[in-house]
Image (cartoon, rainbow, N blue to C red):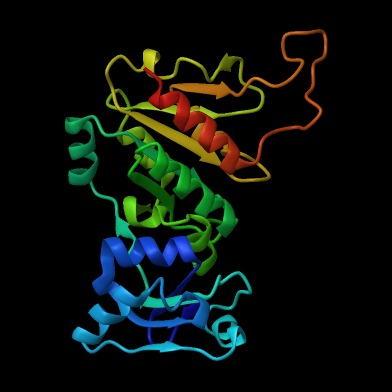
Length: 258
């Protein structure tokens, strides 16, 4: 939940706030928690007291719900400045290519919970670079995505681009551009072996429509996650496709396989 007046974001959830405190304690401007969570955040309260940052144990958990706009606060809410989404530039991309750093590009993933789950998987598999388009259809960093990421937000950098297509064209022959498509013929297994030493740029699409046709045209490969019955006479899966966050976990795992 954003506080537009103060340009703040509420971070809630035990794992999210605990990891935030461990990695970026100084970014927490205010802290609120229930009596049940007091012991867990005692050290944080002491460091906040040293820098004269306010913290408060609330009497009723409904106060936390008002602060973060969610019943899923798990007894703690931390207020931080609205996280900056860094505009992606050629210097950043060139450094990825030089250092062979992989990246994850989201093409209008609109659900905040899905974004959070994707961030969690990216952090788990060591994908620290995530790119999102400047588009109303694309979810950004919210209280929900922060909570669902379960601390993963502290281990990734999120960048913005005005045009996904232009980015894909700019990294042609420099990064392996791999998109997902339910009609693709190439299986997801063995992604890394097909990259020829190049860093990989994984593209995930919108929950309902997938990646756009224009984006597909600028991918080096379109891959599919094999489904039950794919090798039999059955031509369709019982479920049309995986949730985009589930698909992200499969793809990122495949990218990390030796």
